[in-house]
Length: 72
Image (cartoon, rainbow, N blue to C red; front, side, top):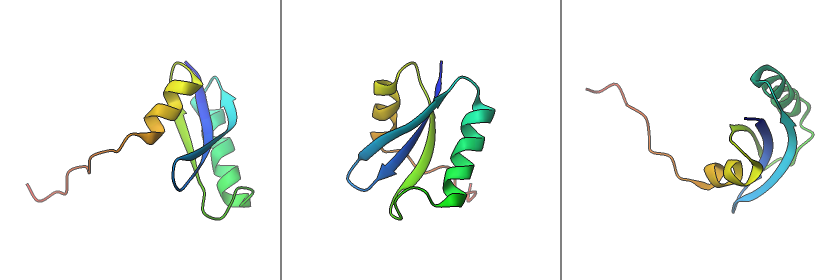
């Protein structure tokens, strides 16, 4: 399964920036995009692991539950 690098803007405006076989290359590319500010100011650069681009975009649109707070 490939790793996809996306630019995610408000209101689920998603743009595929790249696709990689290995996480290390995807992560390095995403970090370089974040540091160079080559994406829009209101965009976030995200890396997703999925079977295909459509599934990756669907996962980006899902609302995630907050993790544990440590108050257990």
